[in-house]
Amino acid sequence: MKKLKLSILIGALLAAPTFVMADEFEPSVELGGALKVKYYVDDANEASKSNGGEFAFDALELDIDSQISENWTASAKYIFKNSSSNHFVKYAYAAYNGVEDWQFQGGIVGKPFGNKSFISHNWWESINYYMGFEDDYDLGAKAIYNSGAWTSEIAFFKNSEYSAEDTRSYAADTFSGEVNGTKYNNEETNTFNIRQSYVLDFDKLTVQLGASLEYGQIYDSLHDDNGTSTAYAVHLDAQYSGYQLQLQMVDYDYDQFDSKGKDGLYAMKMGEGAYEVAAKGQIFAANIAKSIGYDWGTVTVYNDYSHLTPDTDVNANLNDSVINTTGMSIAVSDFFIFVDHIYGKNAVWIGGQSGLGIENQDDDFHSLFNISVSYYF
Image 1 (cartoon, helix red, strand yellow):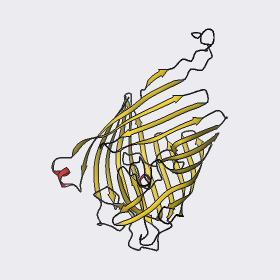
Image 2 (tube, rainbow, N blue to C red):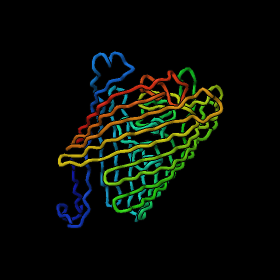
Image 3 (tube, rainbow, N blue to C red):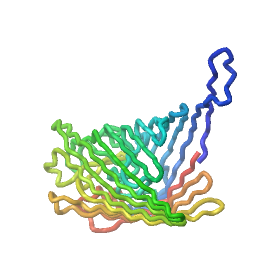
């Protein structure tokens, strides 16, 4: 990805302001972004099928990376989606690198939970993303320690990047408001995350093993009291000669203070939408991929599978959710392309479904064919 680089020279501000020492630090700012469009066919939308699909603007992303001093950097990304009100910050943080083997970040930072990279390869991502356990960013601080094969991360998040009533957000957060006739009054706050990773290197085979923990409060604004959110995950990411295997298991419990009348459900929000999920359960993910390099770029073919199983005695009618995506990504020059067939059951926004781990609206699998093209500048 190319970026526009602006170099800012700092003079001595003494007798000779135009004289710059050879070893003097030079701050810099890099500006970049991406323009994204998509073509999709939704099997639950008769108009979409009849007219051969729809072509639409997806997003405009703007990002900035700054080297402020020898030890300080700052980064931010802002995203404009396909409606005038749907725009939001993905991340915005400052980082300090002045201590050997450590990095400290503060602002809207990535949550260290689950596989260190994505637990998916496709444009739609996995069930974890829609539950707040993949590619998530919140307001807080994080410390990262790297020593050889070990990486340790600990973070504290005061709250989500937007209020619990605001449905704008890049990834899933707790929602406060009404969903399907049920009123929720929850706000995520005071959350701690720990992730420990270890890399085994066997020449051509690299295996990354990891475990993650999460503990936080769920503030009930109506009753002025707190519930708790807890989760743990174990994860594996293995690569061998271009092949990749990812495995992950998440056990979670959104134990809200006022669960009366909720029927074992919890409210989440993202992308200007709100939906219900099973308040307690497990999420399993298993992905395989193969990357092939060419003179002109790289092609990665993959199959990503994720499965949520509700785990509550409150409501026996809750059903599993499944997403399976078969596809490929193509990286060539400044372009990145996804071609995906997304197949889901009881999975939010696939086939008009309205939640995850909820009572089935129907017993069918639904599909979404999607091509996403991104140009990075």
